Length: 626
Ligand code: ADP
Ligand code: ZN
Image (cartoon, rainbow, N blue to C red; front, side, top):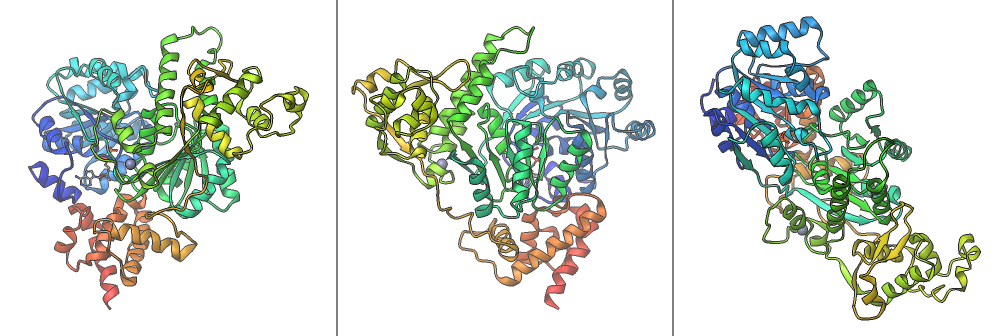
């Protein structure tokens, strides 16, 4: 047993060094302090309670709302050689009795427990009699009544402060907003603790926003051009849409399944398991999917609908690329998204419930922030990080606006045409109708209403429908047009429209592009062999400089190591990445260690995994030479 934090990191996890605040948090907890830890998804929070739990006497108790994932979490830490178990409603009485016995007898390093289980008198009495190293409260933002993940039982976790005053407590979350933070500290009685705020940047994720035209077709092109054979998540707002999207992808030969809270538990479990275990499955999901899923090789997160808030968006996109390899966050957005979200925000609540004005206003504010992010013409990452209070001095170079700086054009005249067309038609029609009138279309409604007689009829020939949609969207996002409160998408002028109409204000808008050639990091993903070569090239180049070119033997070895990993994983009943990440296999293929000692020098190879899998991997690497 190693007795320093770094020793455990090296031998148990096989990692050479701590990242960010990890070492500080671990020291603080090991010494008995309480803390709140804010780090982005994939930042490395779990080590921050696992290592102190190993250094202190007794078991670390991890409170997590994610019952469906506990078994996987336990399976993963067991692969590291840790003694771990979970307590939740899925266990039989005798299984639970076994876990309780192990805890009482000091035979557990980590115990994962659901909050409602923890709060049962029986469990609290069990904890009273056991030696507890620390409490870690995962997904601590669930205690926030404002957040979308509020869970009432989390409020009762304050009881831990009174009942176990000497035992350190760590609250972890990836949601950083100021208000949530204050609520966590107050509701969990952590005021005396230290708050650690990690850097929020996830530099390997490429942020992109594309103007919505034909979203499914755009998604399909994105997947075919850049992510053939990759695992990823496609987020939609509505349950039905997740099913339709998955069916659509399946029709086009892309493996996809839906996931939402309306599916029965067995189907959800099955789809989640397939996502974790298979190589390139896509899950089309509502926000019900993803929390706590720590699959490291999710290569993209796509949004087909505008998320409700930047916090949610950042958490969702953070599920891409936890392994540090290049990943895409792709958002497809248009005016109809704004119409839909406004409608949700303004909709009268189901009968009987009082309209919560504060809640409504907060929703509107969050939507505006999200729109600001979508329309930004400067570096997107700078905007995102600024939202979390982090200043990034230079543009990132890895978002769409950095890579392909948007072109702007003098839109004063087209804006005047659009605004006056809204005025002439009576300020009650949606963008589609306005565009039809501007472009001189002969839609039945245009003729029926006599809008073909208006002076603004047919004056908009200079832009196509896509171009006009882009202008209308930007006029709404910029506050020159407002949506009707009824949620039908009707547009009316705001006070800000006056100066533009009177020619007192010039307006520059961005020129959206529909098709974009993809730059480095994507592209060239054909079938079979090409797809594998691309994946290998990305992984093999990850920890080396940009000019590195893997040779054919290296690529072939990488694929053989992946095949071996897959075989071992199914024998062990765990997902492949729980054995080794792609990045670890890539390092093996590059360095080709021939001894156990050399294998231990590879990042991600710890003692337990060396003992379990070392010989098999060494043999595979030797096979190459023979
Ligand atoms: P979080 O819980 O914050 O989302 P995890 O704890 O799951 O993140 O860590 C994300 C990934 O980073 C995991 O695969 C983990 O093994 C890896 N990781 C964490 N800390 C380190 C480190 N110091 N060096 C290398 N890899 C690390
Ligand atoms: Zn940027």
